[in-house]
Image 1 (spheres, rainbow, N blue to C red):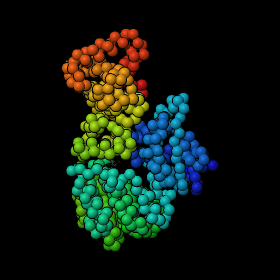
Image 2: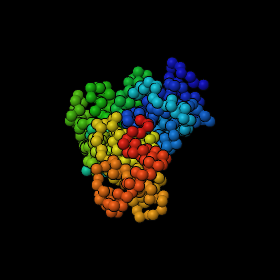
Image 3: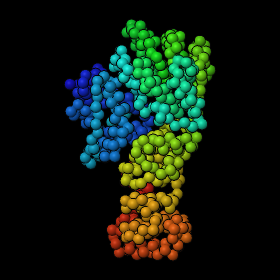
Image 4: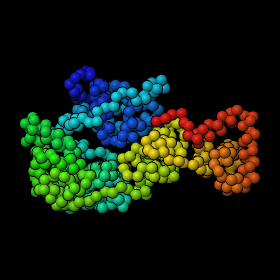
Length: 477
Ligand SMILES: Nc1ncnc2c1ncn2[C@@H]1O[C@H](COP(=O)(O)OP(=O)(O)OP(=O)(O)O)[C@@H](O)[C@H]1O
């Protein structure tokens, strides 16, 4: 049984026997490194560690929506995290907490440390099997999931060429660009592609930071031979953030020899950096020139259309239908970093779900207002229509259509009433939106006004709908 001891607890074989706070903190730290800060705060921070039941780490989440979301988006990552701490066959499941415990879910624990140096690597098996080839790769980072736009099409084409002819097309491939623009994603995509076609090829992805830490440990523990063998025997070496080699002479020296060994035996090397080789200060000339031997390609910030396409793909993969105008609002709000863009989408999804309001530009603006510069969003007719339709379990088209059933007519009249109330549109404009003339709209508005005076239930419904449109939802996220 493992408790919160002073030495780092190792998870035993088979299953996760007990999750101490210390291991849980390490799990969170691992996850945090792999997702955006917004995503981490929105989803992971409120999770409650409920311990192990029947071999599975059980995590408490707020509601069934969150449960589903976790299964789709974080299960694999959490299991990876446990694996990186030494668990052989970890399983994670999610349990909806009863409302009272839910209240305890607001973040209260101190944030986990930013990183656990070497935690993932120390537990890796020394001799990789074909399955291990994908172990260091994020399953989400494939070519299929990579949206190609004018900002990244050259890097994408180069990565694909390398994936098709490793060691032959461009060696090394050097991809540079600002934070969160898809460099790691592309590198991993090459890894997946090669792992798929050549299961016996050894693939190693490593950040420069990890490479450096491992080298330091190897020197300290007198295991430099093992270290060298490990990196010089791979078929594909992916090294992230190579700019961090700057100023590290011993690591540069070691990397130089690794590079040569791989290059000479026609093994593929892909490097990423936040700047081109010529701008990496204090990088040895011999390394810089080697980095320039192959192809240097950059990734720029995505244009608006690419950002929308990325959001759309993410929403579709999450099985969520979000109107185009809402995606566009998010894409306008987050312009330069795709990790933040994804985090913003998730924040909007969480906000809408926790407050039980349909997606609208106002909801998106409100959800993002704590994190990004607030945007002024005017309520549009379509927003009111969507809100009312969602409330009655109808589609906007049905509410706007010509149906005469009471179940449709009342929502239609309420929508017209609220549009008049919440927007500046004239009666003829509202009429046109509904395909009716202005006198019909006038009649609807008067009728709802009268009914509200007599029917407290209707009054509450309209008040709730208005409140939802004016964005004063119950739950902040
Ligand atoms: N073209 C794209 N299509 C779809 N998703 C993308 C694209 N580019 C980036 N992403 C997503 O954006 C997030 C950040 O990408 P990634 O981690 O590859 O960025 P990076 O450039 O390596 O950043 P860093 O410099 O911080 O390491 C990931 O979730 C990735 O899947």
